[in-house]
Amino acid sequence: MSMPKIECEHIDKCCAASSLLQSIALEETAISHILNAEGEKLQKGISLSCNLKELIEINKSVENMVDKLITLETVLKTKLDLINPILDNCDKPHHKPECES
Image 1 (tube, one colour):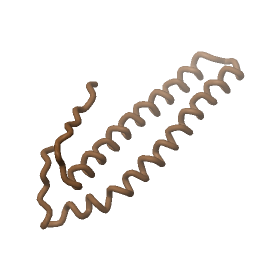
Image 2: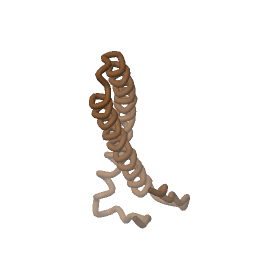
Image 3: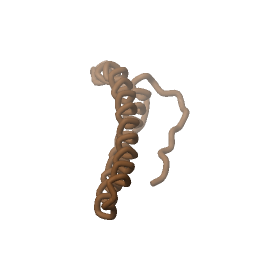
């Protein structure tokens, strides 16, 4: 997957908010892939190991990652809460967007 191209042209507040929303969506997609990989790690560990100590280590590793993802989700939620009022205002008939997407 290639990185999205972000152009630095003059854009209005609504276009900036829309770009932020898109970046949040991309991060959410990445988080879903990480969570899926962590689930696969757990499944593989369970299928390959009968050693309780190894299973506990795998579980700690997954728990650590999930904790970090929870922190990231909190940040993303805060970003979303900040841009939502801007996006709500962009739907008003008086606003003409100056960006293309």
